[in-house]
Length: 276
Image 1 (spheres, rainbow, N blue to C red):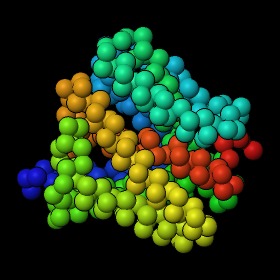
Image 2: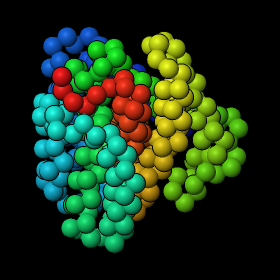
Image 3: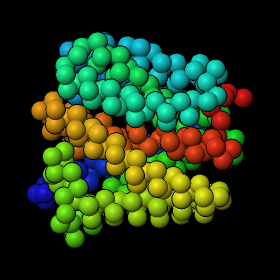
C-alpha cells in the first residue's frame, strides 16, 4: 500500500474513532449518539442497496423504520429475546440474500435485505443506547466491548498478514487475506476480549466468548460482504471514508458479530433489551 494511501487510511480511522468515542462517552444528553446512529442507518441503507444492486434504497424503508424505532426506544419493549432470534436468523438471512442477489431476484433481494439489515443493525443500536445495561448502567461500555476486539483483530490481521502471510484464506473472495492473518485476527480478538473483561470486572468467560465471536463470526461477516461486492463487481461499498471506502466496509465484521455479542451479554445477565 502506498505511503500516502496508508496515511489517509490511518487519519480517517483515528478521526472516526475519536468521533465515535467522544459521542458515546462524553455526550450526556444522548442526542449525539442518536444522531450518529441515524446517520449510520441512512448511509448503511444506501450502500447496501448499492451492494445488492437494488435500484433504490427506498426498497429498504421497512429496515430503516425498524432501526429508527430502535433508536427512539420503541422496539426495545416487546422483544426480550431479540438477541437469540438475531443469532438464529443471521445465517438464514445471509444465505438468502446471497442467493437472491446471485440470481437477481428483485423480490428476494428486497425481503431478505430488509431482514439482514434489521438483524444486524438493531443489535448495534441497542448496545449503543443508554438505559438498557443491567450491570454498569452505561451502554457505551458494551458497544466498545463488542467493537474493540474487532478493531484490534483487524490491526493484528494486517500486521501478521504482511509479516508472515503466505497461505490464501479465501482467494476467490478476498485474495489479499491469508490464513496467517486470520489467526492473528483471532488472537488479537481473544486477548482484547480478556483484557476488557479484566478492566470492567466481568467474568473472564464473557471476554473469552466475545473474543472468539469477534475473531470467527466477525471474519465471516467480512468475507460475506466481500463475496456480495465481488458478485456486484464492486471494490468498496461506497466512498464516504477516505482510504477505507464505504461505511459498510468498516462495520461489516461488526454487523455479524454484534448480534452474537449481544446474546452473550444477555445470556450472562449483563444486558437487557427490555426498557426498564
